[in-house]
Image (cartoon, rainbow, N blue to C red; front, side, top):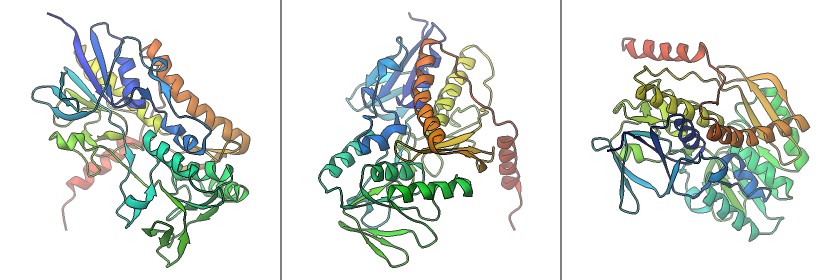
Length: 396
């Protein structure tokens, strides 16, 4: 009879790979990663895939520890009582501990026509379809990108730099995380690239048609190809499996990232909602949460009390094509500082961040337990206390 402890990681993105690599610290832990693709997808590069400047794939041999087993399949259901997973191919896999790291994808919009006529970009397959669709239209054809967050900004800039006639519709504001000074710099970059930026209270999309986008102020913009980047959703696997989730579908956990329903299920990355106060979705957050999820399991195996998550989100990097970028430093309340780096320095820091994500995973594969991250300190405890105070306040 084997004394090994079986840990299964559902999801092979930044969070899942980091968690799997870190778990190999113990020789008595057998780690299996279940992922629908046989290649790792660095999502920070998907806008480059669309623009034709990167293929946005990495071989798992480059980022996954040698002793980790990779199963290429999808999980259709979690059975916590039996500690087993049902796979799409009809088989089941048992586990002693489960790390839930299913990630996120582009949100399905309720705007009329968006699901039918707009292209998402949040997954490898979606970005590949969009890249193919761009080949089918002239370079001068109007392209509209909807969404003023990082994905929308970087996709619009990448295409504009390639010579596309791009309009970016931001909704309320361009780059909500950016400090106003950095936002002015971002507008200058788009002007230099020849792209049109539409923002403000009336810059909301009310309908998407085969050849146009309709705005809340009554305008209709011609759009040969429309790209939808506004918002993210998470897979509904946890909800379908009877586990409690937040309103978005992220698995509800305590501050150690342990499911509120089952102490053998630990969440990480975009699909985790610790204390119903999820962290900002990002690759950086994902692999830090992945490391902490692994630490929670390692503490439990050792008979120790897991620690609460302590994580700061220090900065955001944005690329504006291949020649410029913005590195926006942030406060612990996730608002942008006046301090930011732009131009060539911003570009180099953005590229460094993309490469560092892969390097962190590869380093953890060879030296499990090596990854460290910046701590939050006081801000998250304050948010948790405010949440408790609001929950206990009398209803008037």
